[in-house]
Length: 114
Image 1 (cartoon, rainbow, N blue to C red):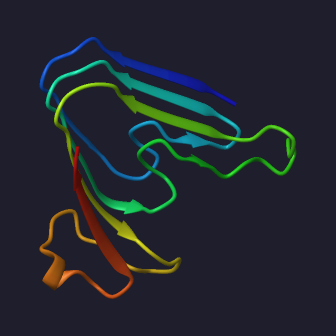
Image 2: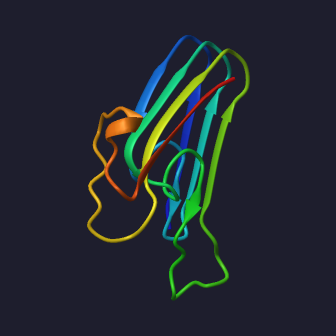
C-alpha cells in the first residue's frame, strides 16, 4: 500500500497523464490531488476509463477490507478536461492523440469545461 499527495497552490497548469496517473489509487493505495485554483488543463490520453482522474482501482486479494482511493479536487478556475480512454479489456490501442472521428473501436473520448 502507498499514499501519494499532490498539492498546487494556484496558477494556470497543464497536467498530462495516462493509466494510473492524476490521482489514481491502486492496489490498496490512496492518491490525493489538490489544485487550489487557476485555469487548468487536464489531458489523459490512452488511459483505461477506471484508472485516472481521481479513481480508486483494484484492491489486493490479500487485503480485501482495504480499498483503493483516488481523490482529485480542483477548487477554483475555468478548467478543461480531455480524456481518451479504453472502454473494454483486451488489446485495444487507444492513441495518445486523435480526433473523435478517428478513434479505434473500443475507445472513447470525453471533454468537459468547468
